[in-house]
Amino acid sequence: MPCKVVIAAAGSGKTEMIIQEALNSLDSTLILTYTNENLNVIKDRIIKSRGFLPAHIKLKSWYSFLLKEAVRPYQN
Image (cartoon, helix red, strand yellow):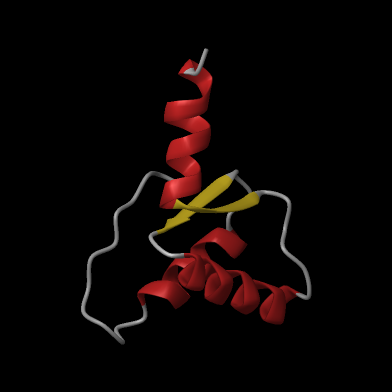
């Protein structure tokens, strides 16, 4: 799945589109959300759809992604 940024109005189906693209992809997929609440909504929808979270899909909040990828590697 190529890198994408999805911008659309509320209620337009952004979350569902992202979930379906991730589920239909065989490639590793990272889904970043701004809040933990949104992360949990996406995780719950994926599990409801498939019964589990596929190993190729990684879910992270923006803050945890920044800590792991941009801050911690350069500490000490």
